[in-house]
Image (cartoon, rainbow, N blue to C red):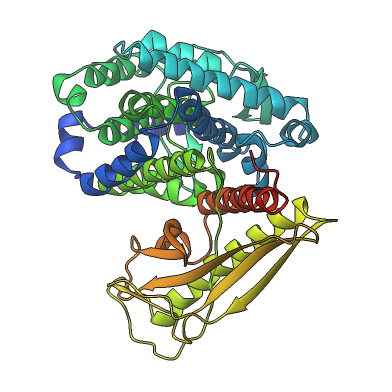
Length: 468
């Protein structure tokens, strides 16, 4: 018997089956307060909007999830700008995707179709079956004809069997250089049958959708039932449960790859809570992304900041006040830049824009403070030349939480209307602005620009006596 054969038997024997759902539920707990708070905000935003607007906002999340699921597997590379362009279907999205090549386009379309399949599965509210999971694999891997296999003579490309359980072992070397065992080939059908039975159990069906999603995802990747595409199938399968609950998938971006894999490794070591917390965080990201998209249906989003630090005592979240100031500065600068860039693209000739920085005495609400260097605000304005000579201005002040934890909010508030406020969690700004927040900032800038041009038009028509 060759060393390769011996190693396969050793690795097969090292397989650690996934836990029962009762064990998973007993060893985890979910922060339902944050879940309900985020969903309540979204429901309030969506209450008076049309189904078309809601579907478009959810489509942004679906496209982001479908695009980055392939990038997580290393099938292609993406960055924040590319994901934003494709997810929001901006004017250049097709050209940007075409630059990646026909293979990437085909992969994205297959993955997008797989999320449509999951949505259809969730809408029909049918129990999860092995047949459905195999069909999901065929959908998500539709554009992929081969996969790489490590053999005794080196890597080889072999045909990828779609919608079929693996016929060869697929144990892997981890990022740390150790071996990781998945279900042996002969055990895989029984393990998949056991997983589906758990997903149909009364306790599972009564559980919170985030708990359902995290368990279904983890169970499938532990088995690794297919030759390739297991991660993509697991992420899409998890989304079936959030689709049923809140009509949107779970957005896991490529930049989440390291914490994503870390949380799975910790789950393998028995820390299921870490993976559940990761999945909850990604669900909350998705909700805020859809919420921001809904805001942009009437006009888009943005960001600001400043930095002047003197005191260095630590907040309850473990941050110094200097760090909180720097987080606010990131928001301030990003919002200021995004708004000015958006306005500059649309002005010229008879309409110009101006901007500036200033101090402020804006009333600070309880629990908030100005940056240590004093109140900071930025102003943007639109000016119409004579004979119209109309002006429109917006002033945004930066407010920081006094005793910041990661889930506390930094606010960029319109000094004339507190309803026009850009909000970002501290942990979205430290150590850097997250991808989801950057998208929200861009949407904020578009909304501000749209509202200012609308107001300038009304003032100009009134001055010229052409109002309708």
